[in-house]
Length: 415
Image (cartoon, rainbow, N blue to C red):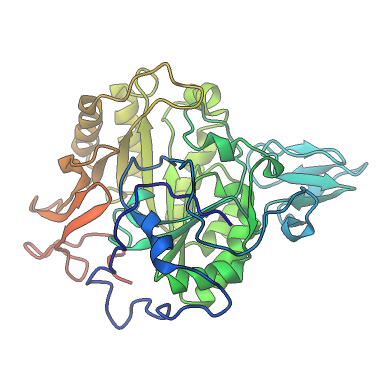
């Protein structure tokens, strides 16, 4: 398959010292005999350059994973499996029970996401193992700041999404049907093998929208856990409670894109709803899942003091003060090229409001070198994790606590 390199090439990154311990994932140092892969060429794509959340296509993508040829037709049965979350209706119709849309789909039709099809009254996903993007990313690019910092995540996506954000930076895969995007057959067991081989403690389901490939995500997470590899998901959180508990229940950490704290913004800009996303966050909290939140600040649309205050108060009241919140900088793309980049002063204002409302870990994203990329102790104020873009410069947290005042710092800091 084509491995799309989403960042500038650099030297192969070493495993951080604090991960290089007996209980770390170390079993992948030997090459897998069934694959002909060039480790250094593959990992050249793991550089930490560029903006978080942005997929940069290269004119000549690195070809580093010669696994199989892409399917030529959408009827390739390798990618088709029965969906898990739907109910059958009369006259060969079905109702999808995966996301809040609850699409009612007639025979030979597809739901809103375009990747699930009704065939004679049975609903199928068309993207199981149909990987259109694969890459090794720093986990900070997701971004996860309190989950295994400094490690690499084997990141993958299929086509499709269940919303249509006007600012989407990955619209060429998220808003495409599976047959419109070059893809390769990469089944769960093979993904787990690759993650082990390239010493990635985690597999990340990201880039497009993992909600719509939940079956693939679940099977891959099972294979990964058997191989000693964890799973993390980067999601819009637009999902019903039952599939949330079943699919994301298999995840070791979750990052939710909270697009706005306004219902009208969700309807006009996202083509979705706010309440189901808030419900998802509350459910994840009840499930005990490590969760981080990203809020993309779009100038003039979701950057009011009222929204920042409402968001911070809701997070503190419903999720707790320790949930990391990332306010990230908007860059014009897709259907929203008429707005400017978010001023850094706006991001600083959002962070100041959230801290004043009592949140402990508030970050500024997509602004490499900003001091709010770092993690600070909420008790003594000392810097505990120093970051430069996606690179960890210093890691001072010891045994989950501040070494200066012994304040507990919530997160998963070691494998």
